Length: 261
Image (cartoon, rainbow, N blue to C red; front, side, top):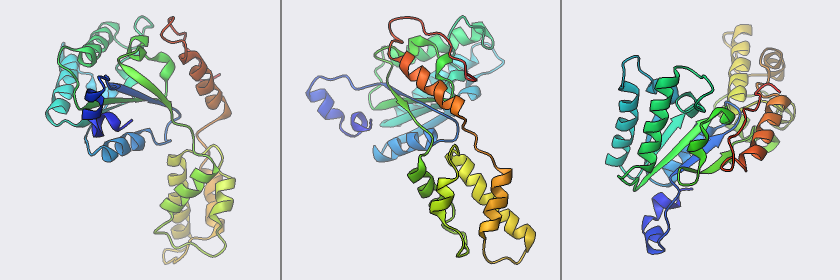
């Protein structure tokens, strides 16, 4: 992914047009933003970030201008990564009645113009992130735009253990806490869920005793009764189904997959 930014001359030497965009999709709180930042860091590129809803303005033409300004800024500081979080907010499938359809049409058109434009995106990589890939305008996913579609799954057991280690690094844990065991029983928890779980356990320890010096297993057990996993089996099935449908996304207009199967 980072090669076009790290080795642009290699692509020129072989006459290869590097991918312009990458779409990251998956459940909320599983690290799409972190992954985009990691690409920029590994590529030693500037990170230009915006949330999709921030693009919209009540003034006519301002939303399109915000898109132009975003790309202008990225070109100025190239090599750079443009990260558009919640890209489905600004580029939903045209004609399905999401938001103000006229504004949406203009914003999608402006985004496509910037990606396809006469002014080449040299040294600029566009990364979009979404929890709802099925409502994206299919024009974005055609070759030459978002060429790479990457699923960012929920953390597996090993990943959950590593995430718990990170979030408890500065927390004095009692001897009765086994992070391996905690990783086993937190299936369905996103990275964000695990962060909240650790924080809640710490708060429970303080509520019990403001002078507490350690967090015990009972605090995590109490926290688990309050903090529930945000990722359901239905959500996983939804992403699996969309992944299968997305393989033919350039051949025909995709249907909207129910997020709540």
